[in-house]
Amino acid sequence: GKIPDGAVLLSLLDNPHALIRHKAHAIMRQHLSVFIRDGQFVFQLLSHASPDIRRETRDAMANIAEVLTEVQQQALLGRLVTALMVSPFPEEIAAAMQGWSERYWPQLGPALIEQLLRHPMEPVATFGAMLVEKRPKTPEYLPNALLEWMLDANHATLRDAAIRAVEA
Image 1 (cartoon, rainbow, N blue to C red):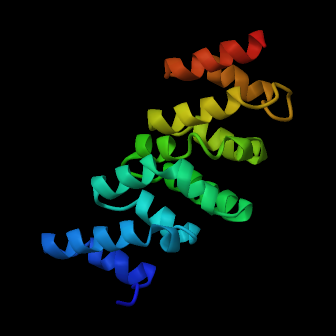
Image 2 (image 1 turned 180 degrees about the vertical axis):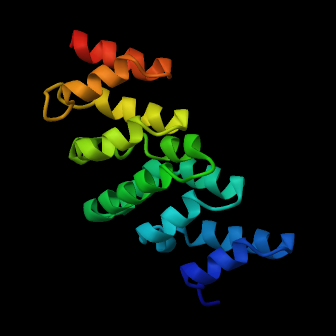
């Protein structure tokens, strides 16, 4: 039969009937290359209410990224970084960005990284610290005031990242 579009497939994946959800999973697996060409759809899977859908998508991210264009990858990274700050499962969102998006991390601006570092949820701040470690340790990337704040932060991960930045 005809392949449903992404919106229809997402609604089938959300269906209260297990049989319909199962069928939707089968359709998605069968036609994965069609669906993952759309970065927005991939984002919806990575931020889906179902832990299974999130996990399967996260586990496939290296392969999915190969199908996306560079522009789509950058857009997806932007959506994920934004989602990271509001997500009820930030650890999963942070994990979904690893292994394919690192080459775009230097393009993330210092203001955004500061927002991540100062975020009250530790997984978000930890992702910010990881970004700091992947960047040049110059004042335009890592202002002294932010470095001092990190050295005094509540999370050990931030303090450790700051110490490594100072030693670099």
